[in-house]
Length: 452
Image (cartoon, rainbow, N blue to C red):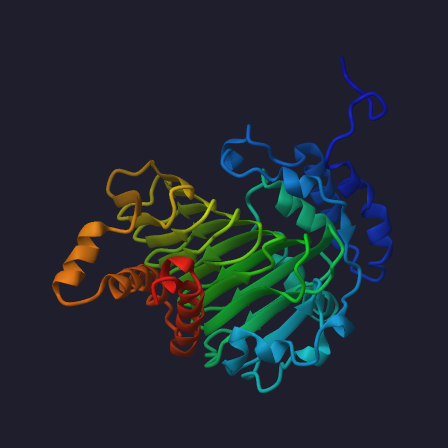
């Protein structure tokens, strides 16, 4: 028997669907071609609903707390609620270069600095680019999101109002990192910021891009972000995502990336905050001779959950992809890693490796890890592996035998474990900042602090 809307039980997704008409009225003036994209996203979200533990891709991460939030999409920013010097206090503030700041999902011109860009480089809010660079945005927006089973990406398509637009022309080198800083400032439970970032790096260009997500409040808000990244032939792109949101908040993110021939792309994920944080990474390697590095570190504690879910698709021959993800977990924290390497027919001479290593600092921390290979070519070199363990007593003993005290030995091992990931950051100034952030965060851990 088919149930009508009046007959079927209310679904958790219903309030998220019902708000669409009200939000759409606030987006008057956007191009007409965008409306079908939004409607398709809404319809797909209504069809999928929120994922449950019965969904294979979500069986280790329960997002019911997000579905239970009151849905309050943020239609305007709250810049006036921020302390005047808030941006200056952020860890990345010491980095030179252009900076686009978003507060509650909306561009904040007064806090941003977009001057002194190389000729032809564009860094703007996506809302502005929909008008000023409509043809280029229309060509790419929504074209690289291939996972139609991701309900949160569908929700983002329906509701995003702003985000960043970055365009680096062919052959142009951007010497300083481009920063995208998102600040959550709303104290309302269920306040939701849907951001959409579009990054286009044309052939033989070089750039470093940093996405930061921080909080000015400690509240159960919801950040839902989708980033589309296009690296054309021979482009060199380093993309770093730093997430340190409130541990009462929820952070769901998706990176959908397409890489061209002979390109070199590094993606780093540093996940420190949020009650539940999920990073879905989908990369398609479309040109011969390219190399992709996916590199991540997560440091959950308390009752935090950090989930990385990846698909690296090798679609052409002679491509290399290397994944390195390390986790340090304490208290009742939980880590999830699902990495899938897909080698299509014809993608001969593929070189792919995947490692996930986890260090548990308590008996109650847990990790669910699932490295996976799916290969349809016969001339490839693919490896994967995962480890979960506590501080290695033999390593501590070895250091002690060299005259190093137990306390210092434990600190050295923990910092070294994190340093494996930090050292892969290519941009020197960014690497130094990340090293300082992670060092200070680890030093705050009772496993270290109580032994000082």
